[in-house]
Length: 330
Image (cartoon, rainbow, N blue to C red):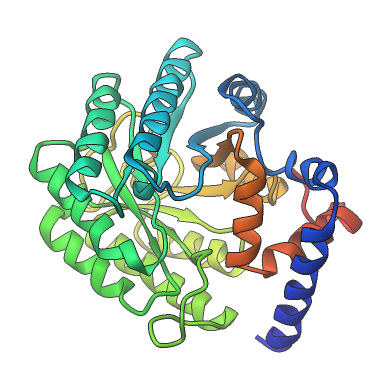
């Protein structure tokens, strides 16, 4: 991508500026991208967006925990999310970070915590997506998915990041073991990893993501395409057409499984709250299943700052949304 280094430099400059801004200013900006401080605020946002044909995945914000006692907060809060989804008849799933449940502190306890949530979600036919964090936990997150499927849980899948060199192998390996039960959210990846293990430029990452989407569709996996990039969306639409997949059509792939409750016919599109709503609405109007990522929680500021540190180009998008709001309609 031409100008990539200049964009990166601008992004880093914007990070430094944003971190010096008053907290109330950052709060004002974050309202577009974070549903609020509590589940009631998140429910209000979801009810509003339901009228636009959207479904949702809910993420309780929080940084990596340092003690197992902190994991209990997330267990309790996600159980409140499950209750809210059921009580309000929302078309929503859960999005969970394994490190928030203790993965980097006590793996055995983290497995137990995740299984408890899975059991509660499965009783109510609600899907759980394990977010993919940085490279330290890539394999261990995949291992959790495989372990839970071995225990009979079918309501769990993971996220894979197209910037990582290993992702094609991970897709094929998981599909080899789970067959049509393999279920992925594929994204470019917000965590900036070293050039030894990942792509670092825009176009190679987009090219890799398009290739990963092709593999998922070929292998019969459920593909949740999490991207706001038009080249990725256009590639996906063409790939779906080549597989005779699309709105109102049953999934024709012989190696695919019947969709679970709340799922599309083998695929869906996913977008962040507050980003490219005009594109999401256009996809929904065409009949595609579109899911909005709904983050909420008291730790919105820490989440925002961490996201800026991980990917300075996020600051560029924030500045653009402030001064050129027509480019990023919610």
